Length: 639
Image 1 (cartoon, one colour):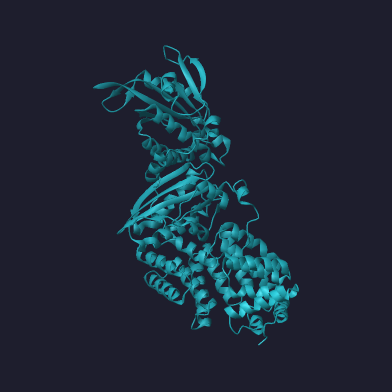
Image 2 (cartoon, rainbow, N blue to C red; image 1 turned 90 degrees about the vertical axis):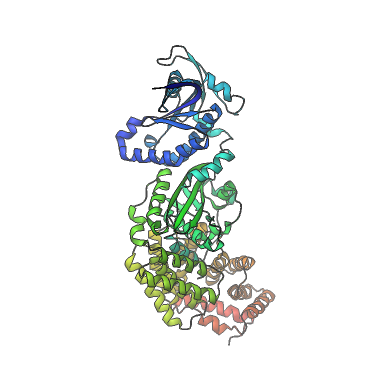
């Protein structure tokens, strides 16, 4: 067997207490280790031009041409591990020790390495502290003037089976964590984006439900309230597993394929909400960042989340490639990345694998395998899925009757192909309810009945689908069945606490059953989950309306003015006119009436009374009558 001598930088890593970890739960530790290798270790080694010589069970021997590359790799890996261990009990955390040496080695014909160069690196790893890095004097001299790090001189160490003492230098875990240089190099970040983003199109099969929920957030005038915590404090109080899924970039070279990338984004938002103790920002807020350059640290402060998930999707015919990366908003470092390549017909299967890998990399477990329900809820019929995505793309365009007609047509075609396509059932129910609410339905009673029937059909097949319960809640509210609507919204929350629209529905609908004061808590949660929602103006109006029902006129004025500053609508002027009249601001009340009649010519107090959502609750009727009296005082004609 031929062999070659050469000088190389050798890195040896090992897991601290691996035998103890494996003895406690071997299957789990092996799964986590495989995840770390595929998601973090191997891609980062490739970025820094390393060659994996061999695996040593719980460790690795890696060869580098440059000591600088070897040390940068070690720092990046050790910097990422606290994120991976967050929330994991101390006795179950995976921690590495790393030893690095520059020396003469022997490379055999099969690529294996031997000699003191390898042995010294291995012995240095053995004396290293958990989470730290230990360098030989020869390696340290190569990096001391190139990397601004606080290495500690450990003095000469007598290493086992090494003839002469070796001077060692250590970079502690605390020094790595405290260093300002935790941002990966520009090369590392870009390369990791391609080497990591392994989670393919795994998602275009379920996001529609999230899209439907996105519509429920504002097309039905759900309530919301501003954040109670300032932007500078939100990150400090953010849940450990809090994140936002930014809109995925369409790399297909065809703008008409945007709907497909958007569908993948929505799917991820929905599925990641099923991770235990997760806090996931709603899609409506996430999509306000579409096409914009984002500072992840600033984004984390704005939204109060610790992670940002971003990526891209490329679709060529039936083949799909999705790249993604998870980034810490606290450090800006890449925590996880992966890439999946697959066929459009197998999106459901791919999505399950993606979410499982991400959950594993974050050190959490899925609530239950059933939470994804990919094989049952997401039939792999690409044509039905595609039509459903197109339907939601049309549905989420500006509110016009033409867009709604297009959405209905797409959903109908999807259901002709696959009558049990739950996303199409939910979408068609939602758009029919919207048609009734906007007054575009040729037969409101029939459309309302069909919307409820479609939501019921979805629930019959998929009883644990939070979005289906949300659709049912909206369809019931359209028919004035507030008690039943609240029950459905609360069922949706029980299945997915990250569903902001269900929170808003459950809160606001309490007004119709005489429990107005209880409506605010659900609303606050809704906007916390989607603080930049495009429908914020409507949510702000609902807060105004809740205050108006409670005769809290000053607060009603404040919130209706906030709503108008975002986007004026005639409903705010109804409450403003009444509130100004009751507080004695007669000139302002008359001005509000004038603006109301400008936006809604011929509107009368009698119409306002008729618009009481068919609720016969006596408390609700008394509160509504007070608003009507305020309109009369403001000068609005009664008939």
